[in-house]
Image (cartoon, rainbow, N blue to C red; front, top):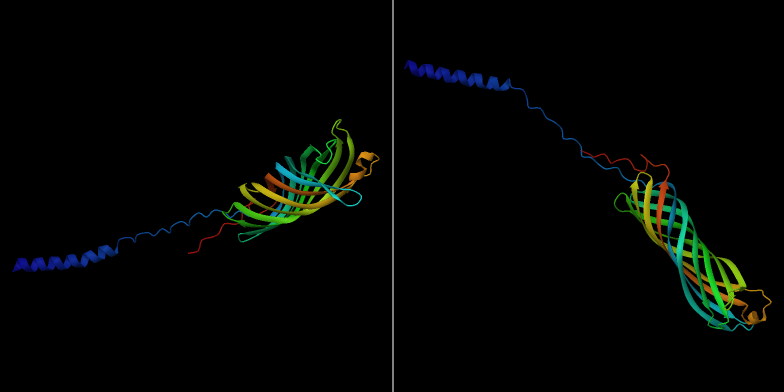
Length: 259
C-alpha cells in the first residue's frame, strides 16, 4: 500500500512539472520569405536618334508621249542597291502600347541603264539617289525589351531620268524630280542595353506617276520629249537607335509585389 501511494504522488508531481517546463521553452522564430525579384520594365518612351543601312529595290515603268499624246510604252525595269542614312523620332509608351513619330533620310544608289525598245539608238537611265520617310508608328511591347510595330505616312524620293546615246553613252536629255508618295512598313526592335536598341525594318513606298518634259534641240528626240514614270520602292534596313532620358537609363520602375 505504501508503495502504491508513493507511485501515485510521483506521477502527479511529474505531470505538474512537465507543462511548466514546456512553457519555459523559447518560441520558434518566424522568418518572412524574401520578396521575389522582379525585373524592371523596359521603357520605350523618349526621343531617339539612330543610323540605318541595308538594301532597296526600285521598280519603274516608262512611257513616252509624242505631240499628239500617243503613248509609246518603253517597258519596266528594276534596279537595286544599297541605302544608308539615319532617323530621329519620339516614342510614348502606355502599358504595352507604344506610339511614335519618326523622320528618316537615306542616301541611295539605285541605278539602271537599258537600251530603249522604241529606238535602239537610244538608251534610258533611271537613278534614285535619295529616300525620305515621315511616318507615324503603333507598336506592341511583346516581351518587355522586344517591340513589334507597324508604320505609315509620307515618302519622298530624289530621281534623275536620262536619255543616252547607245553608241557613245553621251547624255542627250535629262530630267530631275523630287516626287512624293506614301509608305507603309513593319519592324521589330530589341532593347539590348539601357537606352540602346537595334532592329530590322521593311518599308514599301508607293510613289505613283511622275511626268517629265525635256527641252533639247536634237531633232531625233523631238517626237518623245515627254514621258511618264511609275515608281515603287522596297526597302529592308538594319537600325540602331539611342534613346535619351528614361527612368533608370531606359528601364521603367519595377513592379512591387503585393502580399
